[in-house]
Image: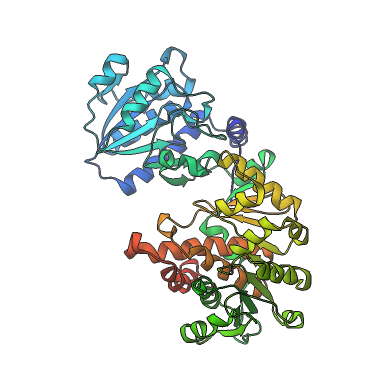
Length: 502
């Protein structure tokens, strides 16, 4: 699992690794440049013309090493120098000296910005790196502005887009990358939705720094990848029966909004639950029974909204998911309170369940460590108040999980799973085609299913979020923007295959 550390700690991390391994800082830079070039080779042709813009710091040094390696591999490369090379870092100067004599290069100045030949297939930004702590100005601002206006080239940032701070929110302008290739771990700010148009597609490449070197800089932030998930899944033998795979209850739905709880219930079944029961208003019984014959349905007393349930019925369930489509009427608020008071097993609260908590703050004291909340950004801000940016939002998410001793899953492009112990995990799976109604209800069903199968709350949240993203990736391969929530459910079985979970 990749540990995310602050930009200010990166130099010390690099120094410790260099000292321990007995290598030079230039050698580590060579590792990074090689990893970047491997990515380029896999994604771009040798006849693609490449322009590399290099500052005078270590990010520029990375760019110069990349230029040399690509040139040797047969790419048509041109280097653009920007900045004061009289004050360049030692490794930057060394890589400048190592450039082949025949590799074309030019120094960028105010006049030459206008004269730069922009007939490139690929533009690589190695201008500033993670050391930025103030808005761009002068020549840098002019150059970045011109590069951002180019339409016919793929823009790629080395480690982080120039102008973007590593740990905070952007002020002013920054390079707008189509792809950001970040070394060893994603920089914190690359995960903020406000920076999406600057980061583009995030790719993290390994440059050989072992995970133990991160320990002394740990801030409890981690980046989930494919290799991290399999060990968190439970395994079952051939003698397992449906009781071993868990009995779960999904609670939700109201007149005109039965689709939400139907999606959650079907997702729980596809995720492997042995028995799935749905508590819905009377108006939803025939809909659910007809659309999901494998589902058991209990009707609440009200025709259109969810009402009470016999608390003695709750103990037979291994986990409960509550909220999708159920509305926020007093009747449903009473139902949520009843379940929080009388069901001590693991629970997922989503959608209107979270909106009820926002309206009835007294219920927050009933949260506990085996309860998982799954708000999207607007639902979360109803809980905690408005947030000026995602950095603030993430801080409040961590504080909420710690204060209420629960798990909070803040949904989004890099869903953040916040644990009561202060740890924060960021998801790397999924894509933009999952931004459609009902996909969050699918996640509710998946996490509830894993809870019912006996997963710890932490593992249920991590496996549910990551596998939900994998299913979305699979579903959208052929359908792209036409992907809907039902497609994600159909892809859940394939996600088990892709992750090699038996």
